[in-house]
Amino acid sequence: MCGIVGYIGPKNSVPIILEGLRRLEYRGYDSAGIAIVNNGSFFVEKKAGKVAELAAQLGQTGGSVAGSPGVGHTRWATHGEPSDLNAHPHFDADRGIAVVHNGIIENYAALKIMLERKGCRFASETDTEVLAHLIAGSYRETGDLASAVRLALTEVDGTYGLVVLSARDPDHMVVARKGSPLIIGVGDGENYVASDVSAIVEHTRKVVYLEDGEIAEVSRDGFRTMTIDDVAVEKEVQHVTLELSQIERGGFEHFMLKEIHEQPETIRNAMRGRLLVDEGTVKLGGLQNIMGRLLSARRIIITACGTSWHAGLVGKYMLEQIARVPTEVEYASEFRYRNPIVNIDDVVFLVSQSGETADTLAALREAKSKGATVLGIVNAVGGTIARETDGGVYVHAGPEIGVASTKAFTSQLTVLALITLLLARARGMTMENGQVLARELASLPEKVGEILADTENIKAIAEEFKDKRNFLYLGRGANYPVALEGALKLKEISYIHAEGYPAAEMKHGPIALIDENMPVVVIVPRDAIYDKVISNIQEVRARKGRIIAVANEDDDEIGKLAEFVLRVPRTYGFFGPILNIIPLQLLAYYIAVARGTDVDQPRNLAKSVTVE
Ligand code: G6P
Image 1 (spheres, rainbow, N blue to C red):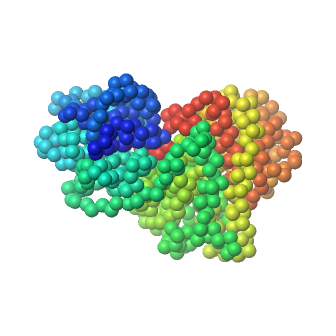
Image 2: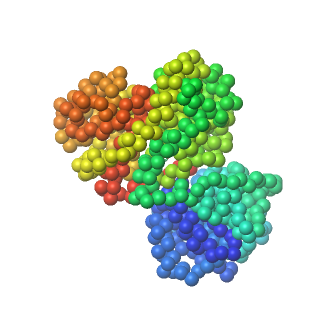
Image 3: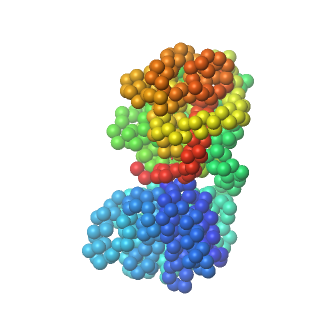
């Protein structure tokens, strides 16, 4: 959610931190701040709003300030409104200790009372500030920053990825992790810390991933890692392959548009080396070791949040209809707290773009504690979910920066289709039928490219409907989740209220909303239930609703019923969602652009939700 970046070394940390914050901003962006150790005290700047506002402020006040170590933070507010005061870093009363923190200190209220009784005065409404006071207290006792952080954290319940600096100790930064990612970037005579590798990848590709319960003392020339109980830990330095171009906009107006247009390639990448068209099957290295358990599973449970949950819903249609495996899908946030009935012969798939979503991670741990096999369908390589699962499949969509998920969704669907085909073949589907499906999958990138080749029609529709206050999205079968996802895209980035509904269910409620002002997007491919959806369209028309249809290229009838038609090539029914969502992503995008919203960083949202 929030982003952290820190630097220790011979260079001035200010530009390094500002650039890092810009790269992290997609994760949380309601306020930002920076603290630099400068001649025995902290130079500090904090600002509500975007990193650009912090940079502008620094331009006025801190133009000549240079120093190291330094740390910066971009925030997504949990405790306390986004304001200059609540922005991180936070300090103890003497401004001797600076803390930036991702996560939530659950017992902060009790700690705050205890600290206030000891005379501490609090400057912000945040939970984080208690850490600064606690650490300052133990620092006075120990005189050693790493020990002080360690001791303070023994009193803390909750989650954290944090960086601590002392104004009196310019030779060290101390970092700690529990439930919120923290990495060390290893340089030559300099080191970096960050919550996400994209913040530092232009400086170093050598990283160390801290595990939960670990602390590191980082200096210019090295680092020392230990557990919170002070047991030394040896860490392996890993090499990340991320390219800078992958996290830059590359000529597109927004990351979201770039990512929408990357989909032919990202879908291809999800299948590369895995889809064996001639054999009509699939090879997935990450599932090989647990194939026996997967095949003997009595049921599959898919759990996820947001867009990833929508992908799971489509996965249910694929897995049940093609592979005939009973499949349940549940929001991770619900699954984790209802003491779910999970057996050792269940397989639980966690679907997550970021691999860090707090509720999905908690669902993983819940399922694991009940003995189920837990598998990940994850985009971000090396994230916590990927590391805690028994196996899984990376979707290989590359970094997704736009807050509204697009390419990760279609890659998740592609991987779910691959898993489905793998299971279907293992459960008796003939090679011939497997080949038909495999060929169809292989043709999808090109078909997505066809949809993306001409977006003029979509821009015109966006212009027509941009001032509407409500939208309804309807679909049936595997396209019902597409309706949900289409509606989610629109509300996320345009702030227009939108609802997705199973088309036939419309008459049990939403039909009351339909009049000549209501745009109704209907996904109506030429499949077995085409006529049923057409009947639903008629019901909307009878009430003067305005139909925007997503329909196949060769559907000559639909033009008579719909005011606007978004054309998609034909494909096998259960793979249809991979194509049908593309025009809806674009529709949401162009409506948002026409309304002038901040497409890549819509208000109140965050890319990676690492709090419950
Ligand atoms: C946030 C993001 C969504 C995403 C959801 C789940 O709400 O804004 O785009 O779908 O989290 O995230 P995950 O990383 O687990 O897929």
